[in-house]
Image (cartoon, rainbow, N blue to C red; front, side, top):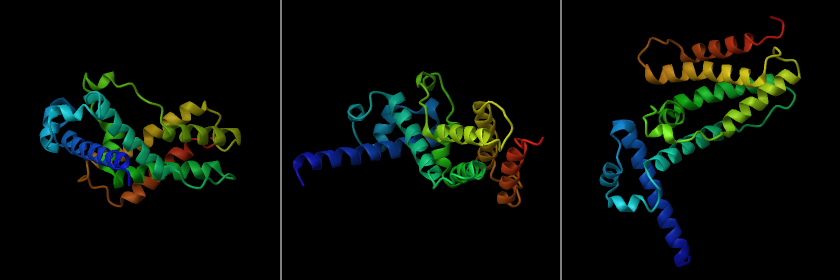
Length: 199
């Protein structure tokens, strides 16, 4: 292993340690109370060291959000049943909810991070997870498997519905949900049924 490779590995390892500490600190204190100085104390380094890896706090948080979206996309990237985009749409919806419940920290960063004035400066990036939903909704409409709505409207409506159940189950775990899987299936079935072309 060359010295350059060792340096690169060490740099990437420290960057990962910084991101991990930042994620924990943001979740425990919230964005409004998060500072690079607090993060440096948590990591055990000088504040200036953080700026070797990230331009500022916003860039660091944006990277955490992006990392969470990438984790979500990993769960959504399944073999695509070309003959039945409607069934694939159902699988995407269930995979999205399952991801959120299994990875609440990642889900929090992707969709539930409170937007302080500082965070409002972060420009949203297009994400492949939503593009996958758009493409699948369009395929369903093209094959007349769902009602002839604008496919972007369909994707946004589905996302709103599945985000609702996911975020509620994360933030209110002590609610008497009963069999969560049955509740999730009911939400997914209701969203699909609402798009039935025969209605």
